[in-house]
Length: 157
Ligand SMILES: Nc1ncnc2c1ncn2[C@@H]1O[C@H](COP(=O)(O)OP(=O)(O)O)[C@@H](O)[C@H]1O
Ligand SMILES: [Mg+2]
Image 1 (spheres, rainbow, N blue to C red):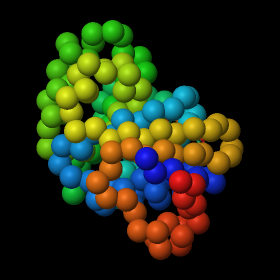
Image 2: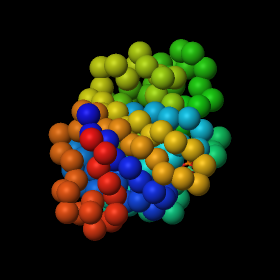
Image 3: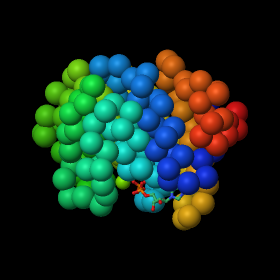
């Protein structure tokens, strides 16, 4: 596991953008953390790193899925409102086992479907106008320390 500390939304976005540079087709990022933890901010950074239009990434939204074209297609899921068993009915496998990059907020709502996918976990902790601890698990490539330093992002572990 690798742990980073960001002190503002922009840093969280920048960290995600760096991670997106190393992402490959079929990557599924599970974004864990409570309301306001910064999951959507992280997805905005992923969009930027994939060359998609980050300004369109927003929350709250009533759509379960948004698709942003980029170097790789970014499939942004916000499953907060999904009921048990609904993910299967909606055919989300097509995306979870597809050729784009998936970023999934509230992945526990689709745990059984996601268990076979090529998942990496991003756990965001903290709330309010403050720092966030961001724990990464399962990533093949991590950002170069020098680039993080330039952005003011600290590595905690
Ligand atoms: N270090 C940080 N990283 C991300 N967001 C932060 C940070 N510090 C404060 N914030 C604020 O927290 C909120 C995160 O909102 P959002 O990304 O929509 O959360 P979520 O999608 O997890 O519900 C934003 O208002 C953002 O400005
Ligand atoms: Mg959100």
